[in-house]
Amino acid sequence: MKEERHYLDTLQTIFLEKMIKKIDSGLWKDVYSGNTSRGLRDILEKGFYTPTQKDYLRTMRGDYIKSFCI
Image 1 (cartoon, helix red, strand yellow):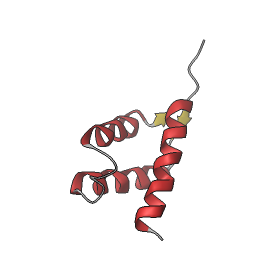
Image 2 (cartoon, rainbow, N blue to C red):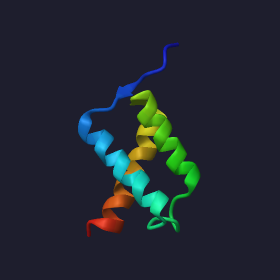
Image 3 (cartoon, rainbow, N blue to C red):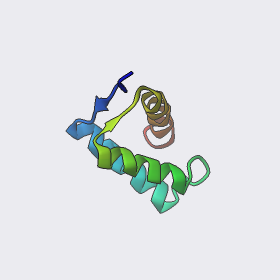
């Protein structure tokens, strides 16, 4: 069975880069680790994410909003 892929658009790419920067700078160290940062970099390099990663990214987006936007 062929793996379903969701390709990144420009805004998603920018947002992932912001999340990586927050993780790498230590501002999010109590929530996410360097492994998460590496996983996000892999997604950026591939240019797409899978349905499983989609759910995880959605959760991370919610955490980002709660941590830095509210």
